Length: 440
Figure 1 (cartoon, helix red, strand yellow):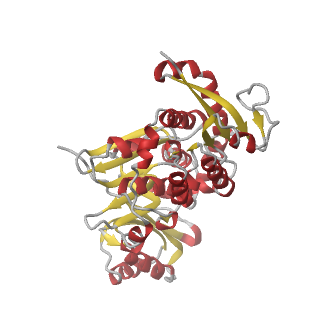
Figure 2 (tube, rainbow, N blue to C red; figure 1 turned 90 degrees about the horizontal axis):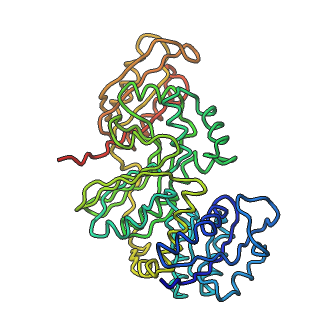
Figure 3 (cartoon, one colour; figure 1 turned 45 degrees about the vertical axis):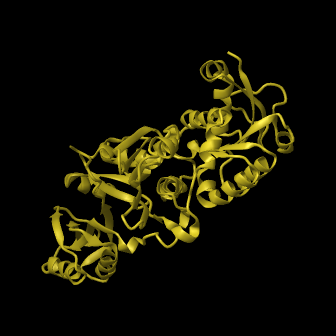
């Protein structure tokens, strides 16, 4: 079989870039035998040209001069793996202007500036492939764009951040505290030295913005998404939730109703212990999608790391070289912002069950006071539990589960509770998410 030579330029030679280079250089023969494409890494650009990497590049392939890549007309595909937004955006725009298709794993850039980049790609007759931007090695984007193209997607529930899932899983299974698990996650390479983007929920929100725009067909902005991280999750809440039949996960949730109203949120969520997503442990990711024809489908796998992400990047390279990405990109029909901004639902309109933990002073009449606050805000109680033991200032923990309630009512009630002198500290509130069951 005649092989087609595909020359590639890579910008960013960090963890992901090194994985991409390693996969291209070490598996070139295998890829060629399966696809008929001979992938050749021609140029690697990085500001750091001296540090050791897990793959050694031949000759003078590594440089800090981007123009060497841009001016090489034999390079047809440019890969951006530098991360961030400002510099990465300029790199992608320059690669598109120089006539190169772009492959990227940069979810933050696409979530915040994707529509501008897509327009630039179309203006230059190029495409952008971005499978690796969401859920690492899980081919979730191609599944939504192609495999589920016959469906109206109504909802998605995703565990899309391995760092947070590793932390919450270990807090539950090993009864460990947040800081303790985070430190081990950093040692294992599951968490960055600065884990703030992961644990504050922004990484998950970036991925949700990309997935929701493709799934629902509307231009979604990062600011459309309500975001709450796991920073303040305590071991007590993980324990009490399990006692009441729930597992705690950081979920990225996108929903579209029959009126095309779109709800987008990332937050800690209690889900039933028997839900398949509750079984997703450690650094793994999973996304459950509901389609009008197919029902529920679930995608599971490693959501981060050098080689899983490199796998998705190289798959995009192959798809671009075969012409598949270009055709798919040209038919990616996303309605403009002027339409979508009118459809985004506010978090105050959310109707959910809620878990509330308050630290009450151990004295008569306390139950009557917090019960009155809930009643005045039209909140009905589904269940409650109180454990023996003392907390700060001789308080005891009381856990309340509500019936379905509007978020704005819960917010008002929590503000009122904070003013009660019989409650110590701020109440803890976690949403309970009832994921639909697709059963015969």
